[in-house]
Amino acid sequence: MKKQLFYLFLFAVLSIFILVGCGKQETDANEEVSEPTETEQEIQEEVIEEEESHYPITVTDSAGRELIFESAPHRIATVIPGDMEIIYALGGELAARPQSSGEVRPPEAESLDVIGHPHDINFEILASLGVDLFIGHSRVNMKDIETLEALGINVLLSHGDSFEDIIGLINLYGRILDKGSEAEQLIHEIENEINALIGNQPEQPMKTLILFGTVDETMAALPQSLVGSLFELVGTENVASGLPRLDRYPTYAQLSLERVLEANPDVIYFMAHGDPQAVLDNFQSEMSKNPAWNNLTAVKNDNLIILPHSLFGTNPGPRIVESLQYLSESLESITIE
Image (cartoon, one colour):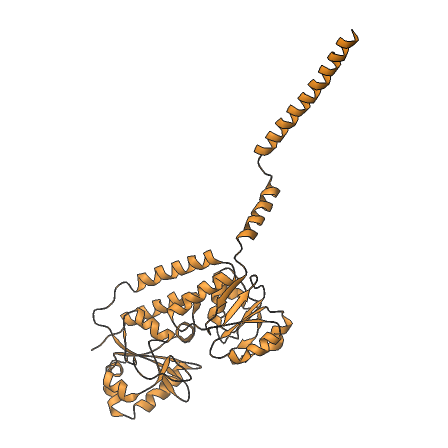
């Protein structure tokens, strides 16, 4: 009898262990198929995002310098309006902006601290703001690298001398700011709008002369310049093409009156710092001393047009579409008798 009771007791104990084990397996199975909570999902997404981070990255700026970024910069300052517009167009922002004599684009940047322009940088403000990336001009700010780096600031030099340069800058800032998809979208939009603008090229290209004037001299824009490249996109013939480059301004040439008279442009476009009309009037006064000047097709038809400096005299950034729109409409309005 005692032996039977012992077996019954042993059977009961084993049954309990079996039931507990089955329950645990069922619980484990349920846990495996259960959906993660919202908090767990956020953590998983953060881990995936960290794993997909493309930092550190090495980039090459417009001056041919290699820069390493361990992470996206957080405190950016620039003295170039076009670069500022690109950064904001990608969803970024600045800690300090360039000096501006006109409208600040975009408007939300107007309240930022001003650090000057490429020829006159306020290093004190840069240091006080804890800037970690300074964007300057490749032909002007090379001399400032040592000072900026001594302040612990990474330095990137850029220039927007052509349509290709501006597209390249959009790509570059997309990489640096970890906004590659935004950069691709912006480039796609710009290229689509430009293709629509330049779809119908004229059979007979209009002969153009593009001048940049200062108080002291007047230069002719070459096809390699920003404004020259834009005129090429709309299918005009640049009569300054082939002239020797200036050492100080490699995308411009010294104006040759003989070359102008020989080429006889249909239209002359003019840009200037300061008051462009005053500079143009002074230029015309000087040119009119040669009687042949008044026989030019552009002069006889009064086809002397001032270009907005913000769209043509400097890198317009993503507003390059506005530059081409302005140029296309201007060319369509020109009459030649």
